[in-house]
Image 1 (tube, rainbow, N blue to C red):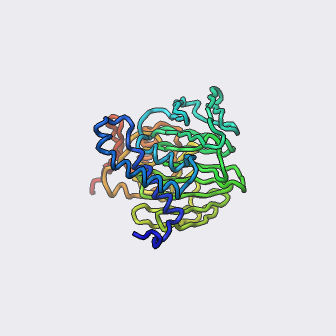
Image 2 (image 1 turned 30 degrees about the vertical axis):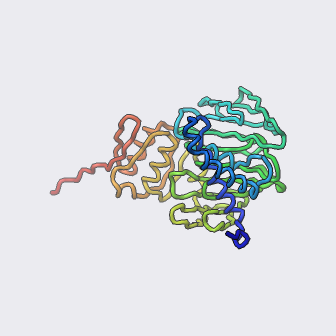
Image 3 (image 1 turned 60 degrees about the vertical axis):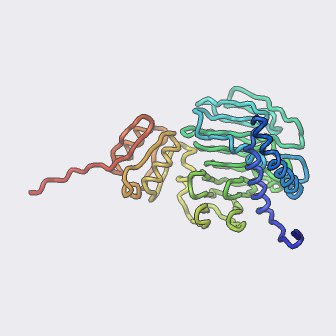
Length: 356
């Protein structure tokens, strides 16, 4: 086969290929029995040869990239498990954050981590030239916020996984998000800030924006509050768009379609940070999904037609979930049925006036 006739891969295609290979390689456990390892020897050897060739194309240094780290770590991460926000430091140390003291702040050098207003942790950064990646896992019903080493503020919503370096190295500031978060990025014209997701890449210099990137949802969306961002969609021919404040860009992973909406309701995407949920012409199923993630309780709608009914309003998320559902039910005309840790919304029976 003559490889010289092949069209060279684009940067985006190379990143996708690298991620697939690393993700496949990452699920091979070191503690497998010797017989199993012997059976896989030839396949693994071939993979090593392929990987070596791919690495020589992607990155000639031995430095692990953010994409490498995420791909290798993904098979072993379960955001839905656990009842506390957990921080996994690069060296493997785990920190469980308490309910009322769950904020994080990194020093400019990245080696000091302050939890809330109290405890401080010292993080070991072995090589000044190589990044050390940390991971925050936020289970459903919990939230947290942190200040990165460059001063960027990140508010992370429930059911999310956020991967970031203790201190940024090189020309870019790159982080990875699975779930939902709001970013207030510190301006640095020389070092763009990038948020990598499964379906998109958002590049900014300094701005405030929100990303919703849950794996179970068809759509990945970005809403810009201030500044300017460049969004790239690797799975849609690498198309890129710049959006302006008040705009929402969404990508449908099933249809591969990109939708741009202008003058969107900012409170719908940023309100949870302040403790309220604002919705405008949203269907009940969507509202139930949002509340389910926020409170960490399964909420389902009984009846397809009722789930499609649309409503507008504002909910105080500081109230307990039962009170929120009961209040919403009075407006949306449904009853609440509680089953253990599950809430079912059922159509309300309306008593008709007897005919005269």
